[in-house]
Length: 276
Image (cartoon, rainbow, N blue to C red):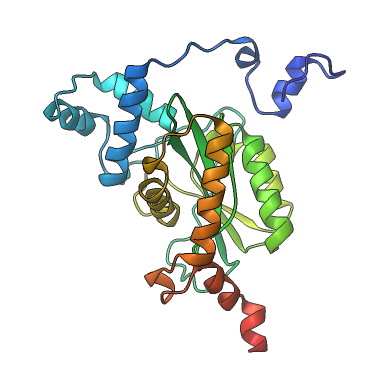
């Protein structure tokens, strides 16, 4: 990622990768085992009750005998890349230099493959530590088009996933994301817009938005991740890739007439429907 021996100055490399210069030199402290256990429980609570914010989670944890402050819960929720899904005023501010694009899916009927793709990132617990899973799905068919397991949330991971999806499946009409910094970065926006797709972004924490990806996270975690205790990043990458292949090709969905996502994707492509 950052190469001290490269001709480009480290400051320039950091800017191109959308990483702050201080982060390049910062050596992070390891997360305590107590916080890792708490993060796992917070993630489970978010999947079960996505409307819960830090205050409600604090009360829920207290009933379980876990005493923790609201601010600390909020800090860990940001590390987990989760927010309460509830309507709220549009008062959030983007990262300096990042552009927030308007939400384009209101009142849009999504009926065809490659009409709308949705992109999001979630936390994946391991035996020690955690990683992030980013995936792009075709909303109409629920097919996972590309994914990546990584240790950070930098924009270049999202760019890599989008380029892989474009190369294999073409260009959708709209790409929808949340307002995470990896998606509001100019590098990511340019990757989408240069292909001729429109970029749509959810309101922060809005309950209606990217719900299809949230359902995917719940499915992956309860059917696979929570049944495992990954010992390494490589093990997490291989096992999640294996599950996603099965999910696409073998797991039927009632939302697409009990077809698999792979079957639904090819059936819902506009060009194939016209030929048929």
